[in-house]
Amino acid sequence: MAPLLSVNGLCKRFGEIVVADGVGFELTRGECLGVIGPNGAGKSSLLNLIVGLLTADAGSIMLDGEEISGLPPHRRARKGLGRAFQIPQPFPHLSVYENALVAASYGAGLYGDAAASWTMEVLQRTGLEAKADKLAGALPLIDRKRLEFAKALASKPKLILLDEIAAGLTEPEVERLVAVIKTVKADHAMIWIEHIPHALRAVSDRILVLDFGRKVLEGPPADVMDSAIVREIYMGLKADGVA
Amino acid sequence: MPTRTILAFSGLVLAAVVAGAPFVLNEGVLRLATECLLVLTMAQMWNLLAGYAGLVSLGHQVFIAFGAYALFLTSGWLEVTPIWVLPVAPLVAAIVAAIIAFPLFRLRDAYFSIAMWVFAEIVGAFTMKSQAVGGTSGMPLATSKLIDFDWFEPTMFWLAGALALGTIAALYRLMTSSFGLGLMSVRDNDLAAMSLGVDVRHNRFVAFVLSAAGCGLAGALSFMGNLFIAPLAAFDVNWSVYMMFIVIIGGIGTLEGPILGVIIFFGLRELMTGPLGLSGGWYLVGLGLIAVIVMMVAPRGIWPALRDRIGVRLLDVQRAAPRSSPATVASTVSERSAV
View 1 (spheres, each protein chain N blue to C red):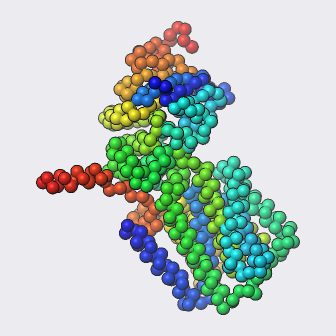
View 2: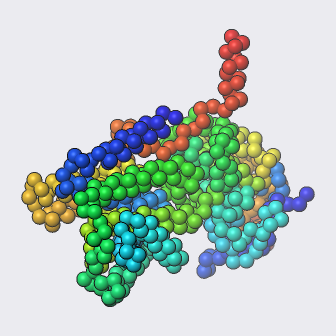
View 3: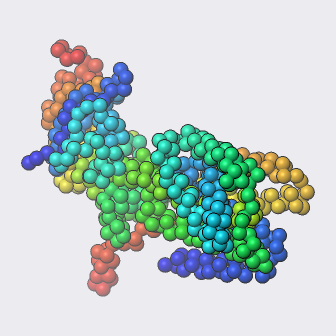
């Protein structure tokens, strides 16, 4: 099966700071790639490069066999990218329903009744149906996180990009969110940045480790989590032969 | 939809009030009402750009001037009553906006505001140098002899009323459309909007051109009422300052805000210069004071604060979520029949 997303040799630097140094990986439909790494490793920058909020210095990003690295963010979104931000980015003065409707109308390109019913379906699936008419600015954190996910999903993406969507939530809240994410996994490719190992292990098929903008490891979750490199990066344990 | 019916009915009542007002009001009051309605239109247009597209223009007087000069010149060349060439005013303003959008949209925030102001000043300076349009001393409306002065003030009022009501109705329609949803998403969070597929730049362009066209038409009507135009009045930065005051005091990014702002703006002016007998300078002091207080107490303006407190929504553009999906309705019905 041809990969849905194929990233090759992605580079980006701000002066001396390198946020992406030849990053490459592939992803197929139904697959979830977990991304871990210490703060400043370039995880969010990687997502920003894929969605077009940052422009890569070099490298290619192929979505469904099409090069998207030259397109502006809104065009990439319409091609099938749905992103949930680390810090929720709601439209505070619009209702929850309208927030998701923006994604359904613009990202998914739906009109009228089709847009309305798809939006409601997404709100049902993400557990926001009862709050549909509430202003997004008045939501508690868990619902803001749900809304981030709902907006990403409502744009009918091929690839969903989640940036620390479980961060800051209580344990039961994380479990409920993970359950929702699992329900949509089969139909989408997914990239998920997260610091919560068990949440990531529950959903990811592979995990990619970033450090100083470089891919240092990629593999099955169990192998990666137990590897010497990850233990060194996260716990400061020195392992020989690794910079 | 009941809200739609109420709004349509209110619109009809207001249209009837506008139609009948000239037969009841004296000429002075009528002139004031005309001025209010034209400034209201300009404020709505400034709000469309600042409140929904996030572009704060300090040079909107340039569109007022372009509209007004276009009307005066076209009417003079064709030797027809100015009313028949009114469409040329928004057209010229829109074309100018569409052209200057290309360099100006490269600038953000304060740089855009200042560049707009500078552009207006440059065009103003050129106008003062151009003897063809009367230079510094300006020019009278060449075709004023074609105007029927028995009906001039009422006609001006009707045109201003139709423009103000038409503008609000059109903006309401726009905001309830899917393009309006895109505009409001940009207003709230442009980063999130573009990440969901909204073409922020295109939205800004459309809002900019529409805003210029509306100001061009309102400006043309305003100077047509004076029968005279001069660059110092047409290119006066105070046009933008007044629009900004009205929108910020009333409530930026709402359709009701500019209406409330215009009432406060003109109410205060009439109160202070009329019954209180104060000079125009004191009026500006009072206005500035109110603006500062509003910005500190209710940064989003008086209307949003009022709306949240009393829970009233006048021109509500929020889309209600569909009650329930057909599947849910069907299951509820079958459950009931089973019982």
